[in-house]
Each structure stands twice: as structure tokens, then as C-alpha cells.
Length: 379
Image (cartoon, rainbow, N blue to C red):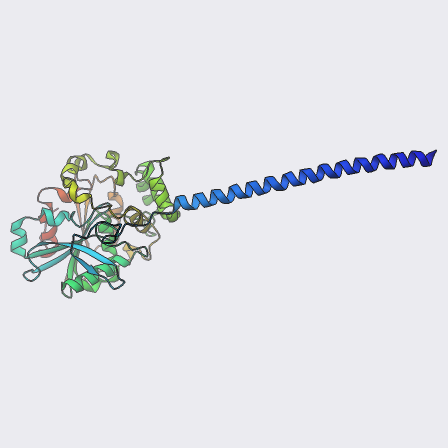
């Protein structure tokens, strides 16, 4: 009897075990399929995200799909082309030769000093100015390998090919003013003098006191604080951040009036009057122009301008820094600190002026006279 009961229990147990095994097998199969589906979706999402953050290729001037070449250009040693525009007296007649470097979202036509300079100053001082399209802007080829130092050597090649002589002057405005620091660092022996007009400051330059840079940074628009953080910490995300529709991007690129002083708002119509010329600014694409500017300008630099030595210890030249005290784009507090750290810089602070002060009537004459002949009391 016990044996029969044992056989019945064993058979029932076996059937139960078989059902459990089948259930476990089914669950395992479902789990395996779900895991594979999740993995496929994850890989697909990564592929989509990767494509989303990849910048579109630039439309290079002179190529079948690119804009036409209308400007004179030089061919650089790495094969890229650099476009330029000449102003003032001829190169052969010039007594003073100046290279002008434009700012963010601009081009060679926006040579605010050249276009605002009076004929009297041009003729009396024999002023020749060549303005360039920085890489990726206007008709200059993009430079995907661009670094903090690369523009300095582009300018040096331009000077050599145009025959500007062993020394020349340089003036830079805004982001172009920031670039002048690199010329003072890497090719100081080629400079006769330099003027930085509202040069963009990098909040991550190590010599800024933390509390000073933090306070200055806090006064920027929230969208710009996020934009600059992305450019500094996640540069590979800069293109996506400035082209997505979820959050506001760079205020300067959008001409957000909240980033401009009252004086800037009055001057902007004059500054942007030639819409036909400004159409060329972004014609090769935004990534190798606007976005590359942000990644370089606010990235990690190889040097700090506050560590630079005086390039003119014997006073054979001079360096001038011009700044409006109501500039909302570039904090005046940081420029004052740079001037304090570098007493060899001649600092000109303009009361009531914003970022666009070089457009003010007569300002170009003051800037050029101060640089070329050391005229005092011009700020």
C-alpha cells in the first residue's frame, strides 16, 4: 500500500516538476527576448543620439555645393584658403599696416575700425588695414583642427604673403579681440602694436579669482551660462545645444536684446545695416564658425593672458585694451582685473559704453591714433 502511495506521489511530483520546468523555460525565453528588445532599442537610441549630435558638413566656398568665391584669398601652408579685404591707402604707400580681426558671428566686411576711420586720419598717417574672414566665416575655409594658437599663425602667413613687413599692427574686436591675446603669446616678435576692443574673456582662465569670475558669470543670461558650460565641459555637444529647440541657445547669435546695453540697442541698426554683406557670415554653416568660436574661446587654454610678458619692454610698441563699462556681453570687472595684473597694458574704459562702442562716431580715429602715434586722453 505504501509502495503504491509512493508511486502516485512520485508521479504527481514528476508532473509538477515538469510544469515548473516548462514555466521557468517560458519565463527565461520571455526574459531573453525582452532583454534583446531592450538592447536593440538602446543601440538604436545611441545611434540616433550620435547622429543627432554630429554637426552637418560645411559648405566650403568654391566647391560644387558651396557658395561662390568673390573675395581675394591666400592659400595657407595646410591647403586652406583665407579671405581678406583691404582698406585705406595702398600697401605700397602705407606707413602703418594693420590686420583687423572680426568678432563673433561676423566677417571681413565688419571691420569697424576701418569703416569708421576718417579720411583725414587715413591719409595723414598712411593707414592700410586688411580685414580677414576668420576660419569658417565668410569665404575662409573652415579649420576642423583649429586650436587656440592656430589663428596666430594664419595671420602670420597672411602678413608674409601680402608683404606687410617684419612687423605689423593688429586690432581685434570682441571674439577677435580675444584672438589678439594669442598673437601676443605666439608671434609677439611680428607685432608693432596691438589693440583689443572689448575682448571676450574666458571665465575659466585660472588667474581670475574664483569669486570674481563666478560673480561676473552670474550676471550673464541663464541661457548663456548653460551655453558656455556646454562649450567648456562638453564641447562635442555644442552643435546640438545651439541647434535644438528645447532650450534657448546663445543670445549673441540670436541678437537677444536682453544681452545688449541701451547704447548697444541704439547702435545695432547702424552696425547691422549692410544685410547683403552679413548674409555671407554663416554661409558655410554654423558649426565651423559660431560653434567652433564657443568651443575655442571658452575651452581650456594652453596659456593665461595674465601670464603674458610685456612684448615691448623697450617701449617700441604698445598694447591697448578698450572696454565699455556697461557692456553686458563682456564683464568690465574682468577687464579691470586683467589691466591690474598687466600694468604694461594701456587700459581705456569708456563710461556709459556697451559692447558696440567702436561704432560710435569718432571712436575709430581715437583707437587708431592711440595705437599708432600714442595720442593720449582719447578714451
